[in-house]
Amino acid sequence: MQPVSVNSQLCPRCGATNSCGFAQGQAVCWCMQLPPLQDKQAAANATACFCRNCLTELTTTGQAEQSGQAQQYKPESTA
Image (cartoon, rainbow, N blue to C red):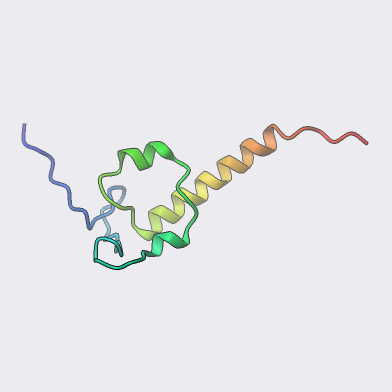
């Protein structure tokens, strides 16, 4: 079995260039403008940074799921 080759410049989700600022030696990266990734499993399994499109989709999905869970357990108001 051959070892899996990982390219740190490619998104592990879709294969597009991830344009990671940190990997390019910059002090900041575009990803710092997005909310933290809520899908801890996706983050743990990632072999490199996600691209902007995938990370935006994952953070948006995570926020929607969190919002839905919060609304699900929201106590009913008593009037």
